[in-house]
Amino acid sequence: MNYRLIDLSHTFAPKMPVWPGDTDPQFTQKATLDNDGYNGQLIKTSLHVGTHIDAPIHMISGGRRLSEIPVERFCGRGLLIDARGKSEIDLPLLNNVPQGEIMLVCTAWSKKFGVKEYYEKFPQVTKGFAQRLVDLKIKLLGLDTPSPDFDPFEIHKLLLQKEILIIENMTNLESLIRMDDFEIFAFPIKLEADGAPVRVVAKVALP
View (cartoon, rainbow, N blue to C red):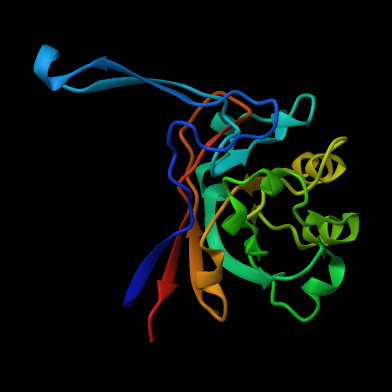
């Protein structure tokens, strides 16, 4: 079968936008070709910046860490919801959609990545929408916004309690609109942690 790969991830780089109050990523050059014969860098970062995935323990006491999640949970058949122009991601968006293993929601909010508004006014996921995802028993929810919700993060908790993992700060989801057949691969580093940066890729079947 012929296919193409589509990158759905922001580049992880110094001075990239972070959730207000979070720590900016720091890249330190520890070795250089001229002085050491090789290049080596040290990265100091929060695990919840850029395109990243949340594990249950991020919000759930006793929840599993990323390293404890079976590897097959990070890939599967994708389904895209077009929520462009919506002020919230609500239950009617799920009407008459086939069941998929990984649900992506395109709001086009990623175009604001890097400006202050990105973290202040993004479309939020409603409880009805989130509960329907629980009922559908999906593996992952992927968003091109910084979060499904604000403090007290009830949507985070509802999803993570059922081990529906959450990918935040995705980009380029518009490229999947009107795509009926694609798979998603979102493998994070196998960290014993509550989250990690992830490179999300869609594998799209070609006619």
